[in-house]
Image (cartoon, rainbow over all chains, first blue to last red; front, top):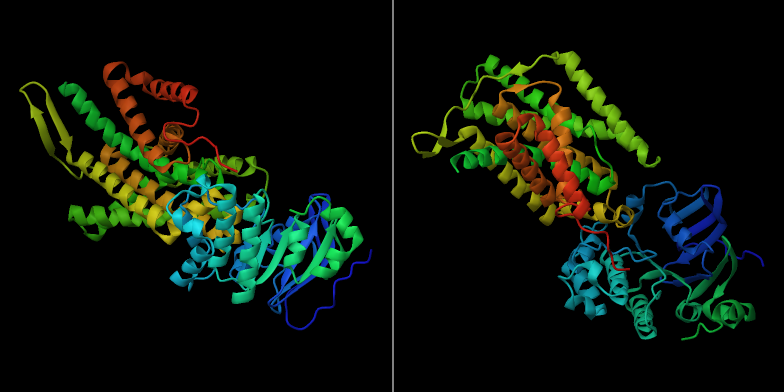
Length: 248
Length: 304
C-alpha cells in the first residue's frame, strides 16, 4: 500500500513530513507524512501499537523527532520545547487522560489556561455547558471522577486554552457506548460551531471515520492509507481490519 | 511537670528548625522524585551567610539589633537561594534525563563539594556569635524550677509559623503553586499544557534553599555557634523528619520536624543525651514498619 499523504497545500495548519521517532532502538515512527487543514476533523486510526500515540506525543516534542519536520501554521516546531509548543495553542487530551488526580476539577480546568493567559470565564462556561457533568463536580478531586468524567475533563481542559488545533487521543477509550457517543457529538459540535480544528486518534474506527472529514490509517509506524472519512469507511480492507464488531 | 514543659518548649523550637529544612527535602522529592542530599549543606551555608552578613553589618555600623537581624535574614535568604539555584543548574539539570540514580549520586557529590568549600574558605573551627537577643518569658517560677521561653525561641517558632502560612498560601492559591503541584502530579502533562517545567523545578530549589537559609539563620541565633559540619547532622535529621512525616507531604515535613525535635529533646532529658539520635532513628523505623508512607504520606492508589 502506498503512503499517500497529499502534498502540503497552502493553508495547512499542521504539516508533518518524513517524521521518524525511536524509543531507544525501537523505531516507532518510520517516516510519517500527515496534514491537518484549518477547520478539519482528521482521524488517525490503526491497531494497538501502530504508533498513533507516539505520533501525538512527538508533535509535542516528547519524544523528540529523530528526523523529519513538523510545521504548525507555517512555523517549524520540530525542535522547540514542549511547553512552547503548547503556547502556540496546540492542545492535547493525551493517552490515558492524565488528569491531575489531587487537584479539583476546577483547578484541572484552570491548568488548561496556562498556554492561553487571556482565557476568560467565557471559556470556562463554554466547557461547562459542553459537559454539564463537570459543573456538578467542580470542587471534587480529579482522581475521584469516573472514567467518562475524566475523559470529559481531559477534553475540557484542552479546550480551556482555546486551541487552534485540538488533539484527542482515544477520547472514547473505556467509555460506555452512550458516553462515547456524547463525546463524539461534542467534538462535532465544537468543530461545527467554533471551527476548532481536530486531530483525533481512535481505535473506534467506525465512529471516528464517520465523524472525520479525512482519515489516515497507520500500521506499524507507517501511514498506509488516506482519504476522506467516507472513502475509508467503504474500503473492504478497512472494514475487515478495523470495523469487524467495532460497530457499537 | 515543669521540667517536661521546659523540654517541650525546647523541642518545639528545635523541631521548627528541622521542619523548615525538611520542607526543602520534601518539595524537591515531590517534584522530581529525588533526594537532594546537598540540602543539609545548603542549610549550613545559609547559617554561614547569616553570620558573615551580621559581621559585615556590624562593621558598617548597623547596631540596632532588630534591623540588623531583619537585614541578615533577607541577605541570607537571597544568597542561599542563589546557591540552591546554581546547584540545581550545574549538578542536577544536566542529568534530568539520565538514569534515576545519577542525580542522587551527583547530590551526594555536591554535598561534599559545599561542605569542603566552607571548610576551606571559613576554616574548620566552630564560629561563635555573641548572644544577640537576651531574656525571655518566665512562665512558671515555683521557687525551685523556672520554666521559661527565651525570646530566641519565640522568634524561631513565630518565624516558622509565619513562613508555613505564607508558603502554604503560595502552594494552594497562586499560579506558581498550582504549576508546582501540577509538576508534582504529572510533569509530562504539565509541559503539554504549557508549563515551563524546568523553570518550576528551579523555583522549587530556590524556595527550598531560602527556607533552609531561614533555618540556618535560626540555628545560628539559637545555638550561637556554627561550623561546616552542621549541614550533615541537621540534614540527616531533617531528611528523617521528611520521611517520618511522609515524603512529598508539606504538612508532613513540618509535623515530622516537630516530632524529631521533640523525640530528641525528650530522650536527652529523660534518658541519655548520647543516645538521642538512636532514639530518633528508632522511632523512624518503628513508624515506617507500621506506616510505610509516613505519618501524612499518601498511599499510591489512583483511580484509572
